[in-house]
Length: 287
Ligand code: SAM
Image 1: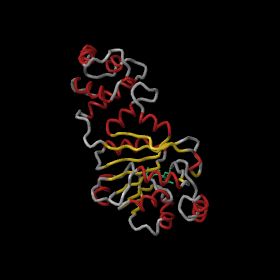
Image 2: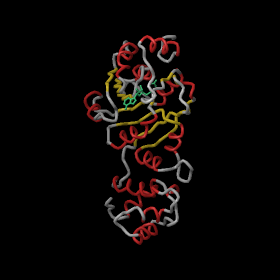
Image 3: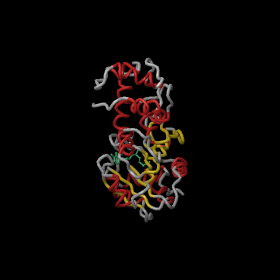
Image 4: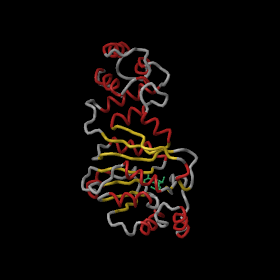
């Protein structure tokens, strides 16, 4: 038991032996708590049928848990100095492949096709916080064959993702995530489960991807959302009409009236459904 990868004593021993130093700029905070590691495996509903893509395995703590549950795990790690460590810590797992690379630069669908039997894939990650949003955006936007994404993120980010219209945290990130998936906070996580301890609290969030995306031109939809939230305190009629679209205020007014949306409504009170209706009713936007 003492040798399981999340034992702080073992983590310190192995990292010292390799002369490893945590990199702040790569967001390296490793899990040292078996309960959280197991919780991620359980809530991720990883079974022996599943292909798993892990982002940022670190020294392999979560990877080991995933390997025990999954059919196959491919883990992408950017920090070269962790590769020999992973060789040792995951020595006894034969269903893992470690890839050295930057998840933001990798062709993920190609990787899924070549190494994960084309998917569907469950993504699991304890993400470096500075790249959380770009990584999640990439995973959702690229129409990959994914089933779910379970990730550790900053607590505030998790709360923004699950926020409902009308709440303080609701914004374009909530709309973005809810367009593609059904988000759920799985567990809130205290700082103490990491080495080194970060300054902020975290949460594990699970995004279950929608099988069918809403029937709307995605490009048009996200133009409307971006414009609507560009000036947070403005009314919807004002943000849409001053954004520089190729349509005049009168046209926007007619659209909103037709949809029974108050002209003075604010973006933070509009649901994904409302934004879909607005995008479908407006003529094609050209910027
Ligand atoms: N999964 C491990 C754990 O839970 O203990 C480590 C988590 S640590 C928060 C994040 C890991 O992601 C680090 O190992 C870091 O080197 C790696 N990483 C950072 N940026 C990355 C990127 N763009 N692509 C792949 N891995 C990255």
